[in-house]
Length: 115
Length: 187
Image 1 (cartoon, chains in turn blue, yellow):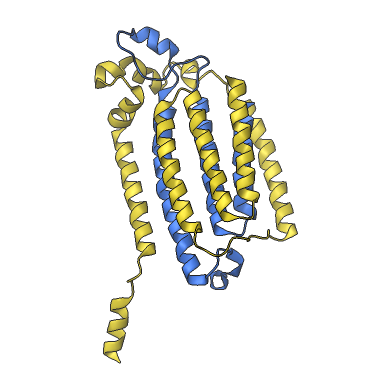
Image 2 (image 1 turned 90 degrees about the horizontal axis):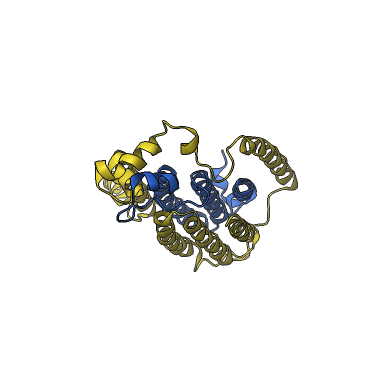
């Protein structure tokens, strides 16, 4: 059920990428898709009633291993979030440049891009 | 717990729909900020404090960058949609993808049972049981990030550096000065 809601969020982003004309709207849709994928990966590692993967002082390793959530997706999603920021900065700078050149954010009015 | 997460996800979905469908670019950006902070709370509820903190920081930067792109541009009322046929095509394909996606999601294990419980030889089990002894880090996430998969983090830094370098190269203004000078010299 939770997975399904995440997939709905992803689909909304995909719809925005396919149907919108404004470049900033397309960037925003891509950001929403990225959020959905990150959330899905972290959901996959969740354990019912689990604790955060941080050891407390004096805690037995066996006891910790029986209660913690999966730390591997968390580590990889951490990387993905930061890379997403870099990609967003690149996309937005492209948008600003296109706006300076054509005076609009609308992709159907950027005539010289048509092949 | 699961119900709270569901409510939060519904909030995020509403925010995403508003962000995509509203006519004003600035309110669109603000709505995407609401989605991002909701995501941060969801990470916190999923027992992932490191990602929640990173998500807040990244979200603030993301908002700053997006507002920089949209503010002081005089185009606010924009984006009539594409032609009717294109929207219908997109909707049909989206529904098809959605149906296949539901089929794939049903094959996953139940929510709340991570893969590391089902597969005993998964690398995560080693990281959890040996992490403190081998790396000396109490936080297993940072043990994975900075020790077991340190090359991955190095690659991440490289990608980030390259992306920012690309952005600077795109935004640079004095690009063609030397070329025009050469042309003038020839004339």
